[in-house]
Length: 232
Image (cartoon, rainbow, N blue to C red; front, side, top):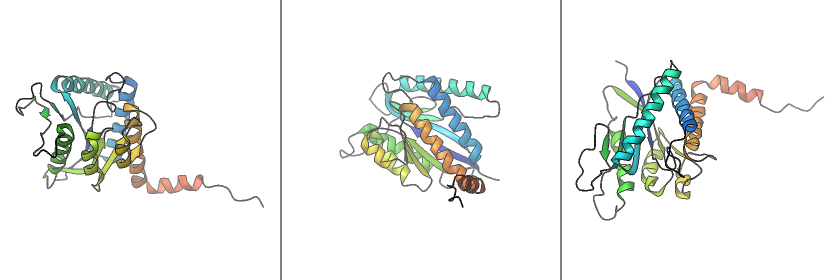
């Protein structure tokens, strides 16, 4: 039986999915984001599984997931040939920081550091979550992980970014409103901010995929854009 192709897309919230200025989702930016996800699925024949990782509390994470799920449902209705999946899972702080209790059907607590050197729970937790999910696809009987993407902009994203960037199937995307350390790791740094920037970065990944899927088309386009020679 042929394995189901899968793409894991991990994203921070503040300044990426959510506007940095007011922590809200821009409807136009979300539509653009879903358009690029839709295009990626059609180009690759893979399902894009969206994961959210952020040092927010469970209640806010649930609220964001619900809003994205509704946007996905509306997009799929409007575009009948699209089949974008709802947000698969996420990691956030528990409402109570006592214990690592399970937070719901899709939300788990950010993993706490094992030792004092890794004092930043968000930074360690994000990296742990990303690595754990990628490892789940090793030797998976039913699914084949063909790509992993990380979208982030801050210092607590750096370890997860480095892990994804070092994978042969990994891409890192940053919006313009990102820390310089994050930009230095990214494959694509957008000139746009927040979710518009993330969408542009995913669009650039789609362009790279198109080059591999349609090599003859790209040769023809390159040929047509070559400068004309001098007139005789």
